[in-house]
Structure formats: C-alpha cells, structure tokens
Amino acid sequence: MKLVSVSEMRAIEKEAAANGLTYEKMMENAGHNLAREIMSLADIPEEGEEEIQVLGLVGPGNNGGDTLVALTYLAEKGWTARAYLVRRKVKNDPLIERLEKADGEIFLAETDSGFDQLQAFVETADVVLDGVLGTGFRLPLKDEIGSVLSAARDALAQTEMPPLVVAVDCPSGVDSDTGQAAPQVIPADATVTMAAVKRGLLALPAYELAGEVRVVEIGDLSGLKSWQTVRDEVADEGMVAALLPGRRADAHKGTFGTAMIVAGSVNYTGAAFLAGKAAYRIGAGLVTLAVPAPLHAALAGHLPEATWVLLPHEMGVIASAAAEVLMKNLGRATALLVGPGFGMEETTGGFIERLISASSATKPAARRIGFIQGGERQEEKGDDRKSLPPLVFDADGLKLLAKIENWAGRLPAPAVLTPHPGEMAALTGLSVEEIQKDRLGIAKRFAAEWGHVVVLKGAFTVIAAPDGRTATIPVASPALARAGSGDVLAGLIVGLRAQGVEAYAAAVAGAWIHAQAGLTAAEVQGSAASVLAGDVLEGVADVMSNLSR
Image (cartoon, rainbow, N blue to C red; front, side, top):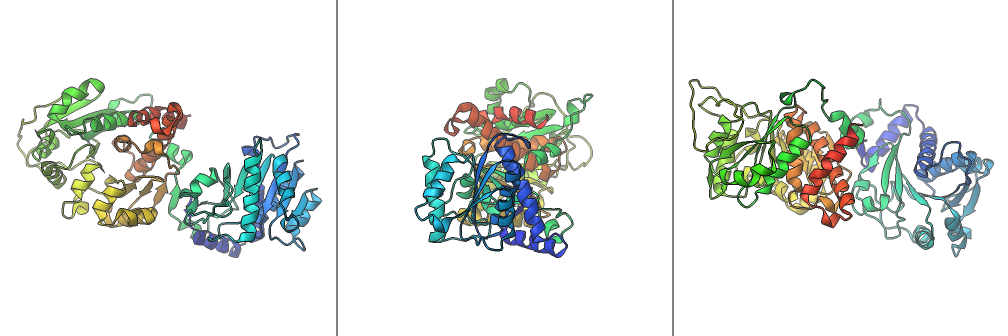
C-alpha cells in the first residue's frame, strides 16, 4: 500500500483525469468499492436478504460523492439507505437523483434544528458512514459542521447497540497530513481510504480515531508518473509474506545461514539471549553468540541451540581487544549484529572502531562449534583481509558508533541501523523533538546521506532505504514500549539477513513481524502493560505461522 500526502494524492488524481480516468469515474469506482468493503466489514453477503439500515452523513465534497455512490449501490442491494446531507445542495445533483431512484431517502441537516431526526436514524442504523469532510480539511472545524458531528457522536454514545461506523477516506475533522483532529471527530470502527493510505492516518491522534484502515482502488493508476514516483509504502501482511525466504524440504542448517550476534555486558545480560533466540525464531540456521566471557555461564543453559564465542572483557564489558578475536571467528557468518546490551564504556567503543576497520593480518581460524578462550591467537601464513558480513547495528552500539569519525563511510554498505529517537539524535546531532516532528523525512534523509538502511523505531516505525524507498509499520502499541523489545527486533532482522534477505527487505519484514508479535503478546497477556520482551519473542512464532498459510 502506498503512503501519500494530500498534495501527492491531488497530483495523482489530476494526472489520472488528464489521462482519461475522469473524476466522475474515480468517484464511481471508489463508491462501489467502498460499498463492497462495508458489506465485508458488516459481514453481509453480496446477495443477502437481511434488512439492513445504513445512514450516510454526506458532506459537500468528493468524499460525500463517494458516500452517495456507495449508498446507491447498497440501496440497489436491498438495504434501507438514508443520506443525511450536511451543507450539500440537493438541486441538480445527479448522485442524489440516482440514490432517490434506487429508493434511497434524503434528509437535510439544515431542517433538523435539534438533531432529533439524526439521533433517531443513528439509533436504528446498522451502519453509519462518515462522509462529511475529506482529506482536504484543515483545522479549525467550522461550527456548523462541528455541531452535526457532535450530535452524531453523542447519539452513537447513547445507543445501546452501536452501529458499525465507517469513515470515508478519513474521519471527518482529521487533518490527513498531520493526524491532528478536532474534538468533534466521530471515532470509526474502520476507515476505507481511496487509492493509498494518507499520512495523517498513521499519526496520533488520528490513528486511534480511524479504526481499521482499508484501501480501495479508484481505477488503474499504475501508468501515472505521479503514482510511480511515490516511494513511500505501508507494510502489510502480503508485502511481508512475499519478502520471506522459502524453506526447501531438502534444506540443512547451512541453507539458512549463520547469524553472529555480538551483544551483552554484565549489566545487560539478557540482550544476547533475546536477540539470539529471535534470530532462530525467524529462521536462521545457526546462531553464534559472541559475548563477554563471564556471561556464558548465565546464558548457555537458556539457549542450548546457540554456539558461543567468548570475548575478552574489562569488568564484564566487551574490551577493545575483542575485535581481533571476533574477526578470527567470523567463520561462515552470513550476517553480524553488533550492539545490544553493550553499555557505553570506552573500551567497548574501541572494540567497535577496530571492528569496522575490518582489516586483519591474520587469516581467520576455522569456524568452531562451541567456544574459544578469549586470549587465544592462532596465526596462519598469508595476508587475507576478512571483510565483515552484512551488518546490523543496534542500541548502545549506535551511540558508540556515532563517536567515530566518518563512521557511515567505514561500514560495509548497506548496513541496517535500528535507532530509537534518542539514538537517532546521537547519530544525527538533531534533537529528539526535531526527529519526532518529521520521522519519515528524517529517516529518508539520513538513509540517503549515510548509504545505509535506517529503522527509526517507535510508534509507526519507519524503514528507509538509501535509494528513497520507505515503509511505515502501521502499529502504535505500548506493548512494545518495554526493555528488551529492541533486542528482539534486532535479532529478527539479523536472522533474515543471515538467510540472504536483502537489507531493506529484512528490515521491513523484521519490523512488521515484531510489531504484530507485540500485538499478539498484548492479546495473550490481556493487557499491554503486562507484556515483557520475552512475550513479544514468543509471539513471533504465531505471526510466522499466519504468514506461512
């Protein structure tokens, strides 16, 4: 699904009209597809015999027209369809004439001074369509329209069995660019938006007012330049399922790659476990955990499937000298995660700087199953430079990376960087407030500038590729606001990279699966407040099961 601004959508519609897909035809397509989605949401078959009442709140603009087309279609299917017109002229409106010919009923808000009629219609409706204001709305809301929305909202709140509320393109009173909303907005159970998701629907508070967001076609836009130039998308199940690697019946563990995870310190022991298990859950064939030596005894029994590289340490944190040990033991690692649970000690920063130099005068020792002694050094003849495998950088690893001169140019491209806003601030020099005001734009800008994939975590995580592509995860949940949740995400991404999934695709799929696992965990626990990072991790298997169906 594409993600567009209001101005982008207008340009698309204008070009479509200039190329023969008229505004009238776009409205006809939108209205018919809207009606089909309404029947799907209400679980009503196409040829159902039930007596269903639908009330449409119809404004003067194009989304009011979409609503009238949908009401006509539903009336032709035998529904009792009522249009409650808000500042829309009746005379010479062919859409209203068509609805009347289909036995639809027309009522005017201007003649319903106390909104008694509106309240009566809401009380008996099975479905209410909110088609008063469209995507061109900007705050503040005019009193005349605000009073209608308030009356409808109050009537819905007082109804013993509330109807299904469907917003047309966007809930009326929502700014479709910023997500800001008037207090009179009617909360929808679902929003059926036209052609593409509008940016404001993936911002608060609009997101909580829109309900389930569904996209319907308004015609074939694929050949339009204005459509093709939109590089921003919303990740969904179909997109992610297509990104996951296949799993042949004759595969062996080597088929699915080796994820090397450098993680942990004495204060953050669990980070390595969470990331390692997540890499396995997403399908990596082998996971090797490279941790400070003292952590091995605490972790080994909890993840018996892993192999281990024990790193030199200083007081339980990864020491600078660990870089050479790690380089010698990369073996057949097909992806490398660096950073979860590192802490901010100077010696660990030295480790990162030496690691990303990615040079060694010693040939890497043969790959080991098991663990090695931290101080061991086996030299072989030759001057083979060992390049780093595909990289994922996370957590404190990012903050330490930010202290290194020209760090972006020294990483093998494209690396995947997974900052939360605070870590992004350290990498960019911007304030958290500046980043949060334009998450999509900031992620896109720095992905291009650095030449790496950026995963800007938080509500509506944004993934940006250096070539300008972006994907937004349509989830904002406090279930993911928990220590260790980011370690799970980093493990998912490196697990996919280990299997050969390209950087941007791995980041998109990992972030979407992570978000869905958070929602699953909240459902299992019964409360987002009770979700732990381990619960999110356990939810991954359920999400993967649904994707493989």
